[in-house]
Amino acid sequence: MPLDVDFSLAFNDRTGKLFLGREIIATLGARVASVRYGRLRQFPRSDLGRRLAGRLTHWETIARAFEPQLAAPLPRLRTPYPTLHLDPLSVLRHRLQERDIVLCHDVGPLTHPDEFAPRVDELYAGAYAAIRAARPHMVFVSRTSQQAFHALFGEDYPSSTVIYIPVRQEMSATSVSPPADHGTPFLLTVGSLGRRKNQALCIEAFARSGLAAQGWHYVLAGGHEPGADEAIALGMKTEGVILRGYAGEPELRWLYRHASGFVLMSRLEGFGMPVIEAIEHDLPCLVTESSVLAEVGGPSTLRADATDVEAIAAGMRALARMPPAERAERVARSRAHLAQFDRERVLGQWRQLADRLTGDAR
Image 1 (cartoon, rainbow, N blue to C red):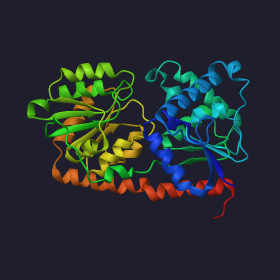
Image 2 (tube, one colour):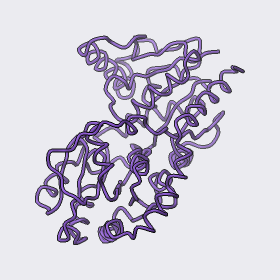
Image 3 (cartoon, rainbow, N blue to C red):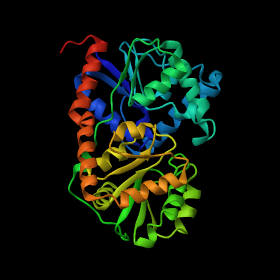
């Protein structure tokens, strides 16, 4: 039996979820009967069409969660085949069943509602209530997310599987684009600027580290999310800090290849692909202790409490002053840890899961 896939997040999402969804659909190949984008079975060909379809899909999702009477005349979606949901929110538009599969990145909107826009927690609460009622097959991108989900919603599901996100092929490309202004040596953070990513505290930690007086820079690359204004204001007046904004793939590759260390001290992450990309580029990493970043980065990463500015500053100094022998040893151990994120290994796990859950013995 084949699968249908709801890939409605492709309308607007430009995060790692989009890249992962494309990879999953491509690797499942003939196992996929159809891909649904909202109520469409083909992705719109024009940008205007994409934006209109995305807006209508968003309105329906909001109505299902907050004003169900408005969406009542519109029947919930159901197909003859099991449906793979690449984001929990899409279940609100479907008649979810136990045979379906839901991919969960994290339950952060419920556990850390202050890190998200207003009412996002309520929206996801509705989606997870539907999941709890139907008890479908669950897939998680980390053990950390899996444990957090089951702590909230119990263990009685037909299956619960962890399949990591594969390393993106784009990072191995050869083309690079040096930024117009840069300073070396530098520590690097990649990720949307905002409260959740904790860059403001990291900028303060860099100021306290004393590294700027020794010629070091701290480069931050990423777009904006809630709380970005504080980080930007602080970065603009802190010596040695360079705010790159959103960086395209060629520029991002250059930054990874020329940095001396990587810092990601998020308060909350679903996975943390930038840590894997940094390890791929032989960078020692400083990450949030007891988090998914520590799980993804492995035992050779430096760790610090994301709320402790002095601990972060000490970690930055440790990255900058790390002896060559220690750096080589940490990089080697980190690269060995990367094997579990190998693209073919991860995508093979998706094929095996689809075959097992749909009874396909190919």
